[in-house]
Image 1: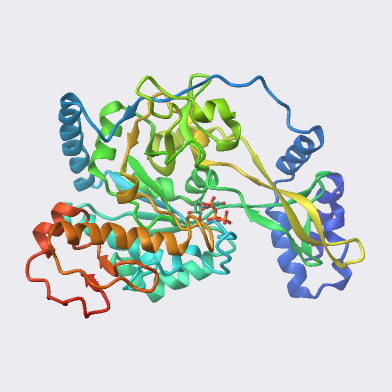
Image 2: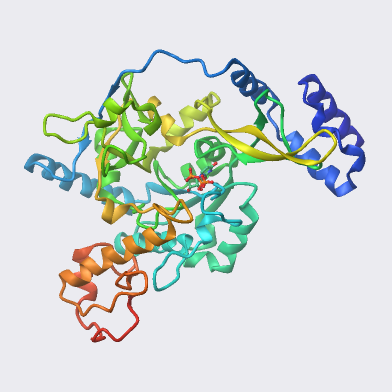
Length: 469
Ligand code: UTP
């Protein structure tokens, strides 16, 4: 321990950050060992670079030139319909041949939702009470059953929630998907800095660490061996999705097929923005490169800009669902990935020099997966129906909250049941028709009609709800 201490003291002193060891004499052996583990994992060169970016202030480059991307739309011409049919075939072949791996990112902290544990353990099934992890697993099982698509599921956690996620997967018997088909890997954490670039402590024995953003997925896939594991299984590309959206369809033959047919390296599913004010990033071309333009980077004129048809020009709302080629990730990570760092200014609970608890203005640093789009020469932007595919749980209340997600799920399933003339239950206290369809049984109206509609128990509206599974 003495040698480790000396080494870290030397490193951090050379970087002008040795205050992180300022409480060493007050720590017991276990606390000392834990702090050394944390210090050894800090990339001090990067921290210095991020600190100097802070001190210099954001260097404002000239305003970028923006353009909307070509969108493969929901309303298709007959030529696009033919293209979609062919793409679906190709996607199905790739899925059935096991060429597609699934990447779920679940390393975030869910701070807006106010959770302590992994967000994936949050229950959202309106009747079943199924958690986000269970619903995603059910979709993968559904793909395996329907198309014989083997499951290779790569799940990113962070050191803050890895053990809890691992324990939950074990407790759920890996959702029947087979432990050997699930590869959990951890993203890296970075210390938060104060506005002068000083590394912040959470308390005398711990750094204030935060996950390095979903852009950290690419690096973590390479360093954890997930990429080579996938290559060994014959996987050529990944369906990437986020833990918070229970409507996501990771095994979508159309999306996977369009991406492959276009020879794209990274592609994105988008939803039409509800209106100009909706606070969602939009997919577009930034100085001729693909990217996601933050809501806050669009001036009021650009937010309101319309195309000839009168639709919003920048309407391709990012759902954070991507297809990403394995070779693309390899090429990005081979030479050391350099996605741009984004700063999130926060009040950070820390300790002052005397060890007293205080809050200071500080910055967390993250990279974003969509910034990798800039390196993709070709990219498909597929428009999908929000009601069918997108309802993330982000906030504890209000928009994008458990209440809106449950309402969206019930609304979708009730629509199918109504369409098929099923007896509908009474609305529950929240005003939702309590209906839930297990994705293993039906993923869309056609499947619902074909597989579930007949033989439904007539509840006469008395039953608390229908759970179709
Ligand atoms: P969000 O940006 O919504 O963040 O992540 P979050 O951490 O879930 O929630 P807040 O901001 O603390 O309230 C979108 C997706 O990216 C994953 C999240 O787990 C979620 O699936 N993510 C985010 C990571 O895997 N790692 C990160 O460092 C950040």
